Length: 141
Image (cartoon, rainbow, N blue to C red; front, top):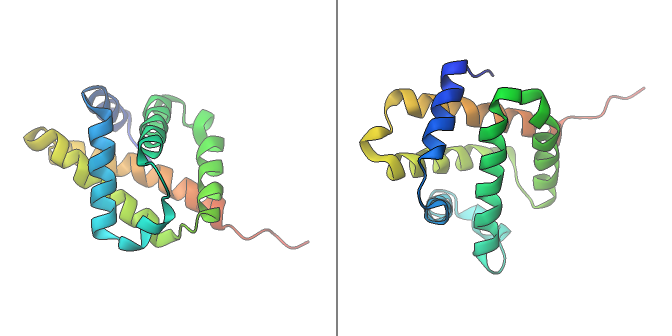
């Protein structure tokens, strides 16, 4: 998976246009639970903290796109942590679908095919990095 410089710029510029991050996160979780009910039991208690974590994680990734090597360890750690919460490879697909839907809902007509593809590339890069770290089998010596 890769992401072009122009796609990085698109992701960064559109993320900077988010005016209500908590609303975006709320819509994301609503959509995630709607399309994959198996994810809902993974979240306990007050979702406000979880929404903050989502936005913080998105910000780290978006701001780190220009230095991918610098954020790979954090993405790998995220993947490994999420296995402990019961996250499966299929859940990563659901999250990607929910994220793209939410961004489309947030940006409306401004969420063009080009913008959607840029976000899909960024998400796929993150997801594949996290999945590889989380589900890799240790080598046997």
